[in-house]
Image 1 (spheres, rainbow, N blue to C red):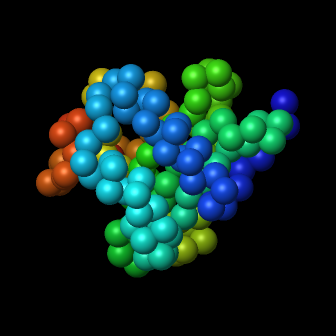
Image 2: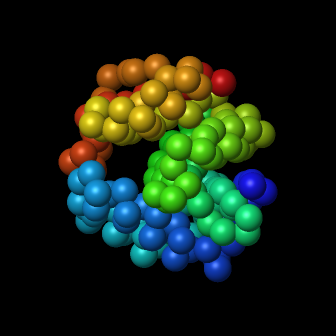
Length: 152
């Protein structure tokens, strides 16, 4: 199994949307804010200084994650998704490590994320990487009921 992490390439935009819609529809629903992000990936995530990473397994897109710049000190990790056939292979660890390395390279002080307590596997992953729970800020997402952060 050849695993590679790559940065955003417009030809993979549909994979970013496909992978994220799959988990959203399985556990929740696609919210208006999700749709706005999907329709404006470049403007919402990339142009302000963020990045999207993809995990390729044998040249096939298996997972993705976004890093949105909040300000010079903070990035938000969002839209972490691994396709069903690839789950259980620890690919999310490669994506997490890419996010942490990216934030450190940008001299960020912390990475924050919002999630749902229904997503046990995701929360366990975040805790494994030393994310800790903090008070939940106001959010546009109905599904978000937990906020976590990692101090760098």
